[in-house]
Image 1: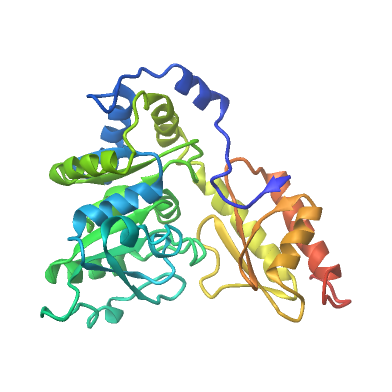
Image 2: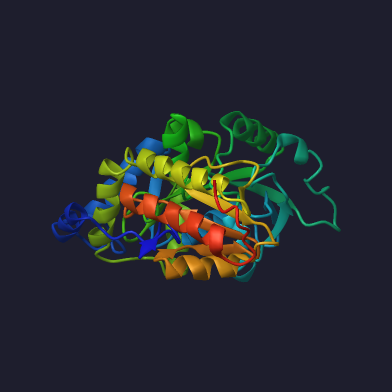
Length: 352
């Protein structure tokens, strides 16, 4: 099976497994696990932040950031299709008593001009707006990259208006590789940043939340509250540390593979890319209703040993990653061409 469902399906490499087996560990709840500490220190340094905290998941990292930044009963701003709003069970409401105010972006991208009237007036009738979050790269936007200048302008506006700023950077490593803009530049406008190791970097577990020392001290306390304190966590942190040190440059290969799949999509009548195209390792292929549905295409691709996800009734998502090689990309592209030429609603012209 060529598994293009997500970049979370990767398995640890042999070198990563050895690093995990040999990890020096301690009790990271009582005091310090040396390998966790090394991961936190290196990640914080890369992002230009004072401190960082290892988490079991990106969702926990995001939810702790939201909780620490915001007063219970307040509101934060976010893009309507962002992960924090769409895929984290409204944990901000369930766990922290917060409200999200969503703003619809273009392929996940917000513009400063959309935000000018989004902060609530300060009076007895209104919830208080305290924070804004951005996601980079944007999953439901199709792996789109928030332009750096736009990010800077939004964060300057937020700071001027007294709003805290959090970046969900689960796939920030992809934005860094695609643009050549370093991690510190992307992270600098934000009070906090979460980054993930179990997506494009291929580690089995873990994310890190980075920010100021006082912020991370409070985040550590909240992690304990949420059940995220881990004992000999160096075993899994070693996998993340190996990924951080060795797997970032190879993200360029995933992006090249995504472009080849994008070319196959464009060759097929009945399929199209979104307006933003393919910028990193995520391909959204939109299906003409006259051909069929996303579910039909997913099922037919599985018969051809290609796994992907139906993200919308008329759109599938394919995600390239380190466990899919060049030959498998060619086979997946050929499966797309074959199915679109002969599947539901296809015409005799097939794919170009």
